Length: 342
Image 1 (tube, rainbow, N blue to C red):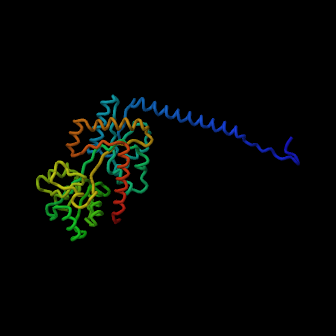
Image 2 (tube, rainbow, N blue to C red; image 1 turned 60 degrees about the horizontal axis):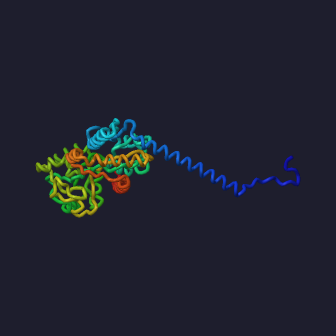
Image 3 (cartoon, rainbow, N blue to C red; image 1 turned 60 degrees about the vertical axis):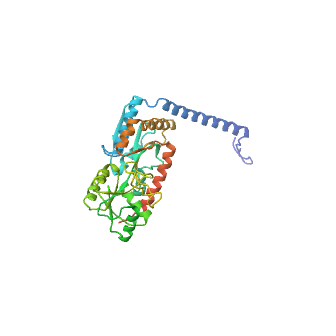
């Protein structure tokens, strides 16, 4: 029989009781799925680590980022009895290495030591292959090395106020060297330009070491650089320390004021180093890594080695580091956009 003439087609109608039963079944299925997911995550965290861990260093061997990666890796290996392999993947201002960790499995077995460049790149590079905020899970901010603003003795300014006055009196005549376009030393100078309303001309070199050679020979007037490479020249009188970029005065040079206390409040520049994992890494693993790495940072021998490179230990929480990364990314993106396009 069908729906003959004069017959209305049957319309199937769900009963309220049927709908309630389906909702209950769907809720049960969802609850079971969530429980299975949580159980799997818990099992992963319970057994972590049960194989080798890779720490990607997005720089060439021998630098400060590499040193931090190897120190932390060695200590983790000693604590957990699992190999920790440091994998140097330098290139493209850390983009190559950071892309690898951002796209790695979020299981806690791939980590990376990142730095200030992670916050600078989004403002300089179009179509960055990863999002430093969305694609990475912060573990902890490891350490910070402040920049010193040092000048050639021929520059008459001896303070930030005098330097700003000199730059305004001689527009586009003063120069500062850097380790290259987009490097932290470059952006530190542009931050000074922006906050002081001046224009000291940027001269990029192929590395911070070469910019120091240019400064010593008088090719450029000043450089923002870490204390490790400039302090010997300051102590020998070959360079003059104008100010330090950290919030507080640098312990090795207590008489040198900060840029902030010299008339530019909130100015801060230097290099920070942090540990991150791929986004989606189980929170329990991130918490465990944070606990172990912060403990490592506070060991006497580690502190001593970091002090030798003029680094200050930080060791904050994942939440604090996440907030810091967002703040740094916004800050350096703003400065990057203010740089005149040549």
